[in-house]
Image 1 (cartoon, one colour):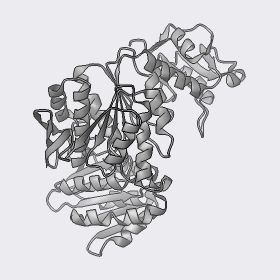
Image 2 (image 1 turned 135 degrees about the vertical axis):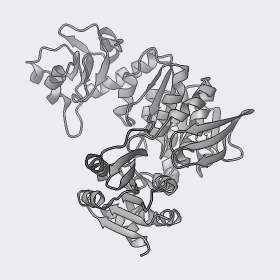
Image 3 (image 1 turned 120 degrees about the horizontal axis):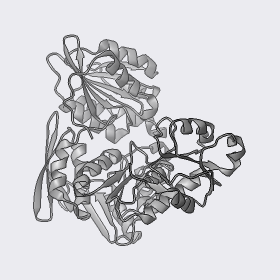
Length: 477
């Protein structure tokens, strides 16, 4: 494996003090001893609940080549003989290394934010840019105050493209991360009422997302959703930030990258994208109109950075759903097959509606049902009762007659659904899990979605543990 950082460059970037016999360099960076690999550097970050210094010996046992530790913790680590870089603050040191990684890189850097679609768009970019050069992108959803500098610090010096996801829960969080990433291209997928409990309205959410403009390099590009109600607000914010190159995507007639037509099927999506003088037919290996919208932002990026557009178009066919964000499982169940759509990673009103639309397009077998297993959308604040009750309309429009609910906030949806819908509701996820396992049957399509804090991944895991999978025919990222 190639060297990510030399030890001397790490010491210089972080202003650290080396102790012991330093390795020539490291091959990776970890802040979690459970995932550390041989040759990695372990950064002993102190979190809200745990302190990485308490796990330093585990890091060494798992193959860490060196430790990055705080000066104040050094006396407690006296018995350890591993090489160390001692710094004042380990988290600040990680930030410094991330900034150094950006400084040394010649990569075209792309940053993605938005209320929904960040991770999917990031993964689409990873796949569609690969034919044009080496791509570095965050694993999972490392989009917060520690995930972004960690992803930056992990960026190889020879990357051709760097793709970063930037998220937020409160105002003021995106700006510092964008200034660290310094994107050549910034994408805002869309604005929707996510984390609404921390904002007065959707316009305030748009202002928070617009903080991504603060880090865009001189001469850089911004890509905005022309169909979003906050487009004018975001475009004005970009102009005020001094950004000259603002581009748009969507169905809107004035969109620079226009979604001319969409044909959704149960297992895939086809769209026709128009930009410049060209029309491209694009097939995505997963269903959902929301994926087509994300794909337009991706195509805009591919074109703007000078990557191979035909190769990117071809790459879309191999793109499937991400774990927790639409991944499908086909399970053997007595009498036939059970289809499970895993949307368990997160939820807000916009992504709930998108997932319900995907369920509506799915095809049960025989006497199977379309079943929506839905959990609370967190951080909705005073708006929580209304946004949960409002899900009744799309469920009824989709013709979904079986709705199984988990979480106290879903009481509002339970009460809003008519008697024609078969509803089961449990305050606790632990009570919903056995209900789902006992009541699914052959031919059903079950879509599971909630905010991460509800732990609906337990429902998915319970189904996977109980029923074996059919041979994998799904395409994944």
